Image (cartoon, rainbow, N blue to C red):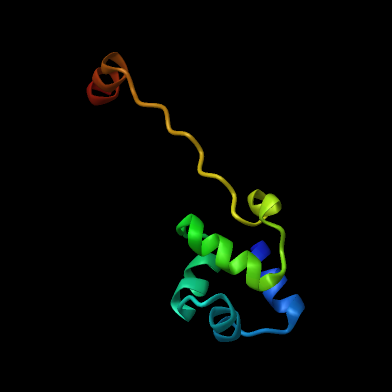
Length: 81
């Protein structure tokens, strides 16, 4: 389960209540709970509303995986397959 959703439910809040406390839209909370990315400022607002220390943000908002650029030889090989 999404850590933001779990923390919100542990507080007994609806998405709308968390949105109001974090000063973001309910749509933003819904998107975050679905795993979509958001701005750092939005993360800070949500964590502050939940009473979660900023230092633990990576537990609540997983970092994006780095994507390695494909080399021209790999592209050519993939296209010929």
